[in-house]
Image 1 (cartoon, helix red, strand yellow):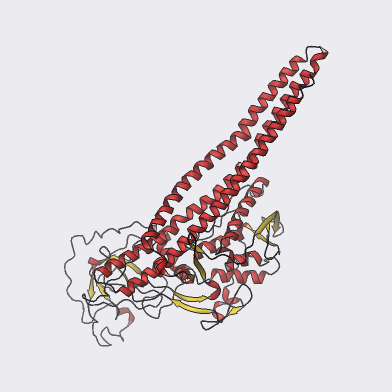
Image 2 (cartoon, helix red, strand yellow):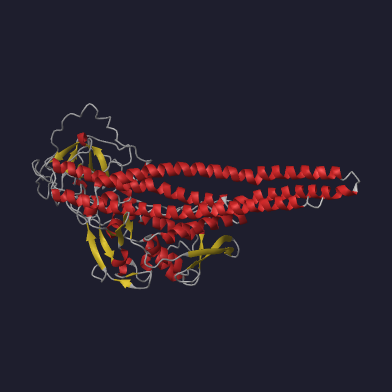
Length: 617
């Protein structure tokens, strides 16, 4: 029987994550073990959350009662009334009306979604989707590209052939996989009696005698809004993940010469983004920019709008919690059809696509391949089917970690892993600061070139021309050549000023575009590191329980194995980041210096041309 408790006093929730109690109300407990004075449970209204342990009394044994007196046959409205009335209650504590503060501050209540919201507590409950449990990235829907009926219609996935409820699940390549018994699709589960509470039909933990070795459990994070919780990392480490994994969904981490790394993409490709054109719909009432994408592995062009990129980013950011999905170029409310903005966005999308195609995992992801290969303009039905399939993907949240295939755990030393993660954390902080500084310096220098330098060189040129005009007042024939040479020198400085104004587009702007892309990557890694750190904390807690004789070694080993899976993936992602960083900055610095050399060669050429004019004087 599940653990229960009776509320001794009224308690009104004041923070997200808490639930309100009514005096005499009977609650279901997720665990009898309190967490810093708080218990987790479900009240009679089905709300799940935290409440003060001092406000309830644990019911140690089932309370017998005939069917007509509060038993199983009693009406539901009296389900919380104990048989034979209520027993005398102890006096409330001095702080009865001052509930203890929640240890960690949570976001505003408007954004709160209780972990158990939407499904009843206990066995047989319907499992919520990973998106309900762990949240996810929500695509921004600003004025840049509105979502119209053609894109976001009201039909559901059940309306389409191969919907989830139909027993078949079409792949993006047109093949179909049946239920759990289909070839190439098998069920993986990390569920055990280790978890503290019931989620998705798992039975709540039973109360063991105080002397039992397995009585201790690894506690949940009180902050249910942390990345470790929302990503599904906590549920995976605690053994609560369960789902069907197809062979094509497996993501492999291998041991390379420098440590764990993602298995290489056997079919590498690139993708060009060209021909941004303004399109209209609804008889010209709505306008947008369309980009032509041509992947090298298909050579079939497809056309995408920015909102399509935005939708894809949302799916990828939700699906891959330990992979740094590159950020898209920023949106803009006004001036979306100006030539400069379109050109700048296209360059940003090219960088984004380059990083996507270079990633061994993201490049092979089904939703990304669907984005690159499905011609939405000519096969709208196939496009929408693939879109809805991606939005109903079950391998997100805790289930995503089931898709990871890693080397033997013996290859990892937790202390070494922790040291590498801490070192990378310091590296990203320093790189972020340096990138901000370089971006500010480059932007300021470019501004000076476009305005200040151009103006100053033109002032010099104008002064030389003024001198030439003064010399022309001397009507001597032998001075004509000198006057013309000085005037030519003034024109040369005007031209040099124009070269300075145009140069940032060639060298500094590409550097700043690259810095912007990497600032997005650096913004992703704190959350990725937080997931790994959270898993490592659970391992340390389980080891402490083993040393105290409160937990079986087998359960602690299970936690460590799952932590190793997250660590392998994190280290593989860090390795990939360093690889592309070296590649990108090498290429960009070479390009920058080459453009600088070309620029100064042009300046030198202008000066040499002016110099030669004096040879004939």
